[in-house]
Length: 306
Image 1 (tube, helix red, strand yellow):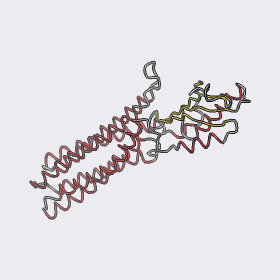
Image 2 (cartoon, helix red, strand yellow; image 1 turned 90 degrees about the horizontal axis):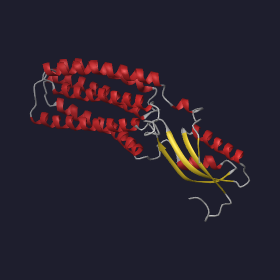
Image 3 (tube, one colour; image 1 turned 90 degrees about the vertical axis):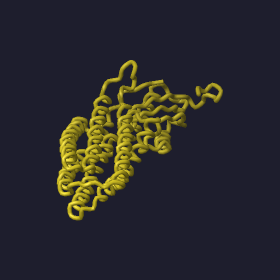
Image 4 (cartoon, helix red, strand yellow; image 1 turned 180 degrees about the vertical axis):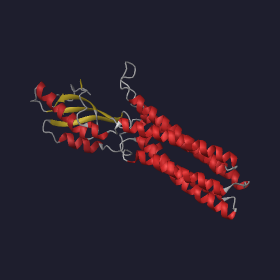
């Protein structure tokens, strides 16, 4: 069995640029932390549960961004004797935790909303609208930081979804604030928060499912085993391929192991060349870490290594 670590040639264009992503995360964390503080203080002063629950929601975003940033950093760490693959998987765990936290936050908003329907409370609509207006600005700016890289990594996508959802949430809170200010209808507040919940659940569900699949070593959704098999079998020297396993090492890096059945006539040098060609092909499919075992076609079923 041959291990090959010279797999960095073509894979760079798949990965988000680290320094840029790190900067985006930091800007997002700082902007949103300031906004949480503004919402929290105003929420207490105006007795507005809408602002307080939104502050809680935004605080979960700050935690999510910090978690994703931490996962990014740790996934760059070198492999150790204990963690032979390095810490890549932490990026998948971070996006899973992120999704779960978001759903818990949603549950608490729902609980709060039910209470609000039963006991409507007096709030200052105009101030709510102004603060939420600031929220639209901050969340939109933060979301735009991640827009271009969002398809390259699950954590960046998670950050983008969180922030984009927040911008939408802020729009609804502005509308709620204006309606409360002009009509004095108190139940608008909880109604809006239930709308917020629906949006969050809808956007988080896919993220939760995908990160759970990757945690369980499922084939990443942008890879097709049959297509990869067909691609490899195009090479004349390869008679068959089996025992294919593909899994995600991180939210951007993938790994694969397989057995190749090769033509009997190949010598050692040619076998090495075939392996190299296969790895090259797989790099274009966004599989960076490949381990291949080779068998000869003539080996009878009885002697064949399974």
